[in-house]
Length: 336
Image (cartoon, rainbow, N blue to C red; front, side, top):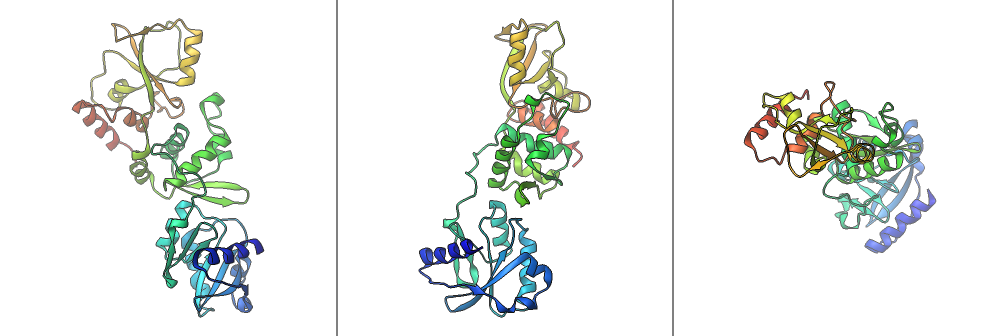
């Protein structure tokens, strides 16, 4: 707490050349217990304006709407301005705090004090490094899981890592990889990341349809490579994909060359254990194989074809108007 107050005073001096001294607010006993239990309160004068700092007692990041509501309750007992002081804030919550007109300071990163005409957003430094223009395969897999199983849930890296227990562990992702996925989603504003106890919690605020529409521009085709092979005699892990899967979902005629999807790891294993002959082009009785960046087994539909969202992404750049029309009809059937 003392370090945070010291950082606050230093931040004001370095950025605004304001010398500020904080002191405990003597009127704290006039507040309800839950507010005294959630925050400590300090008085400070900024540009001859009396201000009251609300400093959260723990690291659990409240939603901006709750912070604003609590500020209004404190305002009834304080005549000056109120400022929310915290050591860090997610990119998602930073935007929401500004939308809610909540004055706040993150020492070293951000200062938003609209009542004083101060909005130093250029000093904001995101907690995590900026995400690339397209989602990584693991991050895209997290979004697909939310789309298929409901975005209205709270996810932690440890809980997500335990999903799909019936599949080989190599087909899903580790806690460390999923933690990086949280960072990506947060920095793109697709989800918010809260701190509860010692765990980071991922929360999608959008419903399924809105999440799909907002995330689609950042999602990439799962297909890393397409190739043709002669049919294998033994059973293999290919999942019907491409035009074969699209024909399953719509009235589009199935292709003469069946299309299957496998993960990159499964493709490598197949080449080691099977006498696979790759062909330069389709031949009679051949199969087309799509090698995916993530396992199609993760999200396959009940009737053993790839999921609609991944299928859409794999074919969205196909120039055939019939394919585009079929994709549109397929997505209209999704139960949003």
